[in-house]
Amino acid sequence: MTAPLTVSRRIAAAPEVVYSYLTDPDKWVRWQGSHADLDPRPGGLFLMAMPDGARARGRFLELVPDERVVFTWGWIDHPGVPPGSSVVEISIHPEDDGSMVTITHRDLPDDEIEIHRAGWEHYLPRLAAVAEGVRVEPDRGPGGQSS
Image (cartoon, one colour):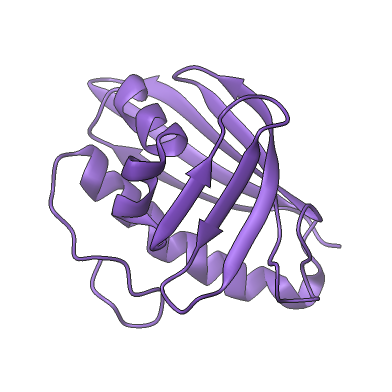
């Protein structure tokens, strides 16, 4: 395992708006995936389906309203990162009239870092757009799709 991967972005939306896109399944799928089943409480289910049918599953570990969401992460059908084997922390810090959002993904195997970095670098701008009130096309996954 290497150091955690981290991506950050300033979002022109209040922390409570950003937080809502991390805890409401209807809002989650506006920026990532095609389906989400979220039970945002410690121990609650995190389940998200990608447009290609890949499914990520985990459990919420910590939720601090308008500040932080932490959950375990892994792929149901991918042995390289099985469900619950890594941890995603999304931190939201007020900044001027918006928020600084940092996604930190820990415990990934070395050979999974770059593909997960590409994923988060694709999805963080989509999260920013929807939180800022911009309409985005339905998610088609990383790899050349417009964000």
